[in-house]
Length: 429
Picture 1: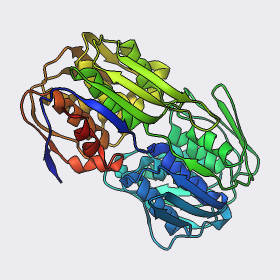
Picture 2 (picture 1 turned 30 degrees about the vertical axis):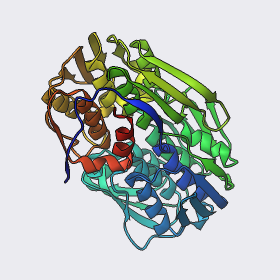
Picture 3 (picture 1 turned 90 degrees about the vertical axis):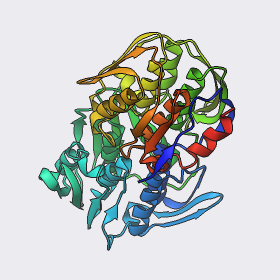
């Protein structure tokens, strides 16, 4: 475990950052390239630990994946090209890898076993194993299939009509990937809209999927064809610099090549509601993934309420939104966010605990948090608790802190943003 002394009490942040590839899309590019027919090329792939775990798993399933400076080259032979792994599939810290991979493996007529790190071992899996079992796959694991290790013996799947009990893009995607292998049409109903990268990628690979409000239908037996993917920058990574630019006096930051998928832009709406000077420029809309550049300037912020259907559109950004709220006038309330309890950490308790160490006026609730601004941050020893988004949020908080800040378990940041500190340091003036 690495302890890092963070930069504190900076004057301002100025400059440009080209945001690294989107983690969610990078995962899916490997998966779809592996189950499609032909050679898929991927550029701007995110080489973070999570996405590298996905590559490692598909190599063990018999897929040829080559990495170079230009990106990835994936040789897919369809679902039927996947072969029984001789080793356990280790997903590392990646919830996306394990849940989506379960959907793929549920339809494959062989045995496989999935494990992850200690954090993955605490994350609930019955939300995926229950509906996949209803489709005909045989899955088991600790606590009746709720925790890793998870074993899967897949086979002929029946279509499902299923209403998700929680809004989760991972669960939805797992069922879509299983549905592609089922004998008939599967119907998946969301309680609220979640990120739709899986649906977009099916179309990009020549497949068909329909969506009517919150109801998704996918037909089994489709053949996917290889494609070329340029991964846009990750708005979840951009969020840390958006908040830094808004709260550090005298700052102005340009963030380039940011994915602006409308199911992911909740952070932009919240910041605009709080009064942030945030501008979207050169937005490019296409059928695959919209992208654009963002300009953020130091802003006078006011408190807000973050709730309801907005939550799935910014669930990963809530830790950094909490920091943003500590520098806004008035009170900010975040609610309807129980899903934060089953992320890499219990992000409600962890965010509150760590920001309090720095002097923030913040309290946890059963489904979110209440933040009273404007707080002076004073410094201290903090920890990422092995959660990459907590680690990056604390590094941004340190920029405002009057005294020294030490971050324990700083290595967790490489899960999604290996060059985070390198990019941050180029902005400090």
